[in-house]
Length: 261
Image (cartoon, rainbow, N blue to C red; front, side, top):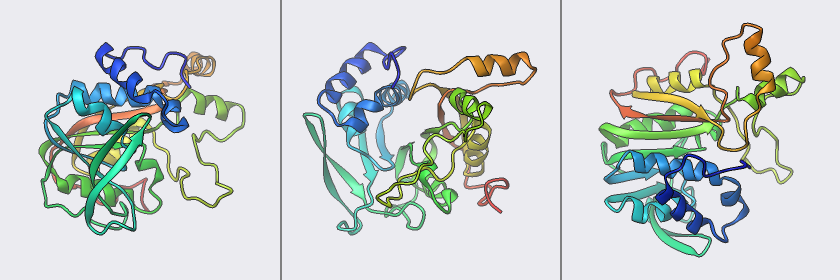
């Protein structure tokens, strides 16, 4: 967990995030820096209209309720008991909220809404979990997003300073590739670099700016400094990839090379 998870975050955003996370579960507390930065980015985009969040925990709708009062948030939620869509209640700390959710397997099923329904889409820490066809989900995001609609996406960076340090010490660079003893499917199946993330989003019809920040843990400098001194052009070493941009075209390449064979 980062030493200062609120460094650089707007004070109004910080206050609300701190309040929402009081008494929250371990997952939300551990991800404080990433969650605060995500809300900070959304507020900076001054979003209005409808936004679709992929796989909500309830935190984003709760935190954005007062910060973005003109934004209506819907979400996807894989729940076999839901047929089509339904309002689902989520609890984070001492807050509860009801979110209109669409039950869909993001690699197989179409989101049950019309084309160009949403003004924005938010996809945080979902892309790395796709097992067989991440472009299916991204193509669906393109379909349901209005022309020039905003996309905000985050995913772990496989070539972070910690990943590079692991490799230089003979260890796999991955962030969370471990298997679960419980046989759950929640491991990461593919972790991206800034270059590969930019490539796949461009193929999906989005024009984005991609950068990295350390939002899980404090960055490590020794290995990165050594590699730079050795002549390697090392950039984008934060542990979280952030992409922000717009839909500019339909999908241009359904199976981008390097990611698909």
